[in-house]
Length: 328
Ligand code: PBG
Image: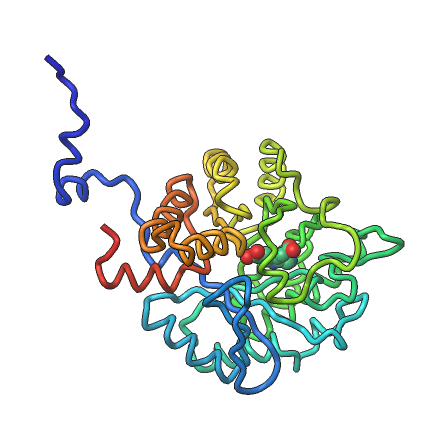
């Protein structure tokens, strides 16, 4: 006779509910929002349906809707007018730029929201790279003061957590010092620790018009073939004072998420990036996949791999399904 029958624990929804190992709630999600200067703008990103470039006036009701759905953590990205971009990304610290104004407006209306920022030169850079470019090279150390100033400007505008996404060496420590010297010891850092040179950022670069003008990002973002190297990045970021360690993208890098989770004690975040979201949206629109089933399965896989927190364009839909009890 068979003594062990694992199917006994799958017999009913109630039993499956008891033995479920992983649970995901809207508390654990971060919703990305794109911003653009102007008034009354809600422009859909064609390669990322259901996601928009918002002007600040239209963004505020959207934030309110997120809060109603139980999403309290937001990450913001700016689409900057080409005419305002330069080599040094100098517009990034202009207190009147759309990004810093948006942070101030959101915090004023909704102080309970967590605002996570993006620190990298690319949205403001005429070269479209995350660091400063000279003779076709991305310079590391001269980029750091620019990142430090950007982080302080964001913190002064009211940001809660700074998100360095640029992959320059030493930036977490540099930004930590800059924030502390400016008296912002309570502002956290969610470091894009293991950010890979991935093809899955395409729709995001469409959303922001932020693709590199020349070359690629392979001299600073990680090689998709590497896993152990992610641990070097994670140890450095932890030593330099990061509060969260992020893996990006998520789905093709679930092993990296597990590895970092196993070796370090900081909370692990994973960015379910634009291309991962676009794949599922495209297949669902063609009738090839069932969105309501595949989407929560994707998010659950990222959580199961070890991500405590997930940045995802699916956050609102997930929160809606969660509230309506449609996730079982
Ligand atoms: C830029 C940045 C990128 C993303 C977040 N911050 C793109 C890039 O590195 O080229 C991608 C996010 C996504 O694809 O959803 N520093």
